[in-house]
Image 1: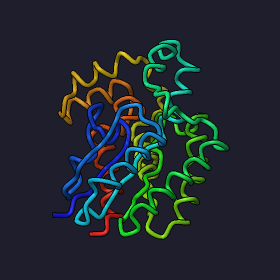
Image 2 (image 1 turned 120 degrees about the vertical axis):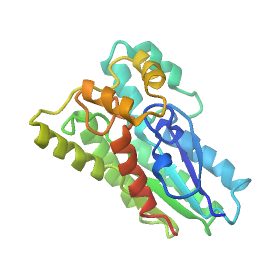
Image 3 (image 1 turned 45 degrees about the vertical axis):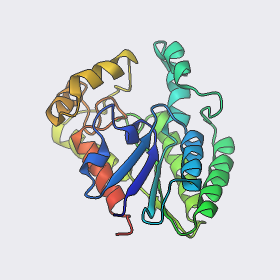
Image 4 (image 1 turned 30 degrees about the vertical axis):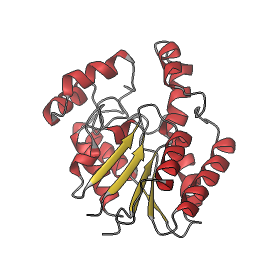
Length: 244
């Protein structure tokens, strides 16, 4: 049986918020680590390709890069994150917040993955929204980085770009119009809320939606991790570019 192998950060892990893979109509194998950076995701995928990735598993999804922007931003702007954020940083794979450093690293790591298994169908996901205030400085930087990443992905013949972000932005715009509201500012305001949200939501869509509404959010529970609407949108985007 063909299996879609997923490597990524907390979105792929699916413990915080709702897991997008639960809505994918294919067999999946997830390797997500909360707080992981693009380099961490890429290195783990490379090791996997060198060993366990079989010929019957011909789709590899790489979802990462959000924490390269998000963790440094939260540590610089939120007092509650200054100490807790450092606990997420791994010395060997730290966040790379500047495009001048990130894009060469992204290119080199993707080249290694592509060469390791030229027969594999490799899917690289865009960095998702970083807060539902789409005009924020952080989301502007995210759009610029996504554009750079997409241009790199296009240079590899066995690698496909998967835009999981535009549909989330469209859903947010629709929500703002229907509710007649301004952009919400909630973005991982208190790191203690992460574990509290996990305990409250579990895998319950209704509870996730309740938390989203309490924070005036449309597709996430905290500005990053998806609720049911967001998870289904991400799953549909990835499913659409699978080779079967």
